[in-house]
Length: 141
Image 1 (cartoon, rainbow, N blue to C red):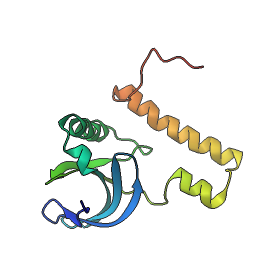
Image 2: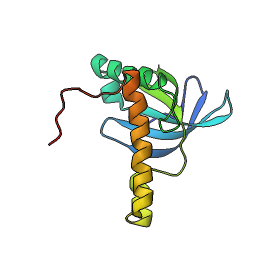
Image 3: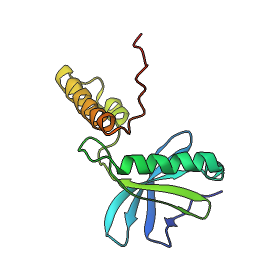
Image 4: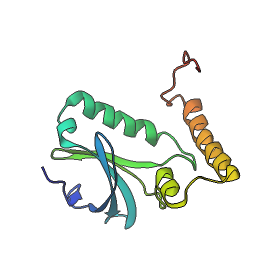
């Protein structure tokens, strides 16, 4: 099945792929109604057709939409269009941490610490909100 070029009756135009995981692909997209760029995560159709997985995907969007912090990507919309389930998110320019490392090599120690501190601040907000997928009985090894 080929991926669509638009979603939500043409509101979101899918322009290019940004990344791909085991169950979903993220696209750079243009929201024609609000006239802003977004990132849209589309669950692969073979998973979107499974009610349990689709429900988990939508729960992810609902959980993320509750969080508001500069180190957490904002979620603006969730929906489905035919066989496609999708999450509309803030578009964060610059690529992933892996992209940065591939371009530049190892980070200088101060920059690496700054990145980890920012990551921890986002996780802290998610944890305090009760939405973080953390278990209290985890043990460090």
